[in-house]
Image (cartoon, rainbow, N blue to C red; front, side, top):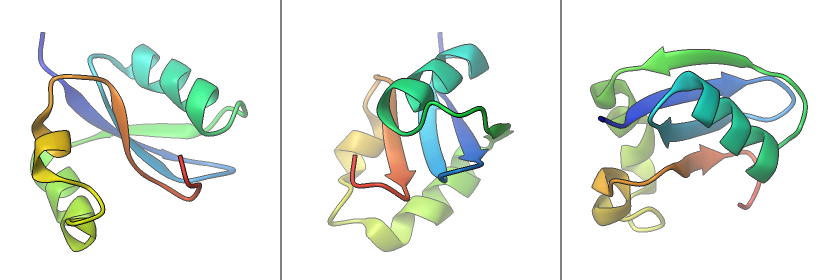
Length: 77
């Protein structure tokens, strides 16, 4: 199964990588905000362009790691 990237915009912004939309929503609710948010699947290229200015804070290894994770968020996660 391949990780996909999801952008959640609502009470708080988050870019999450997960195996499914449902998993991204659950991870968002557990780690960022428990309020329903708009969810859009985005391409890896879009995710990379969004994360690239934060390289150093976010490692390339973290970006490509095969695990569910919050890539960016309005909150310090």
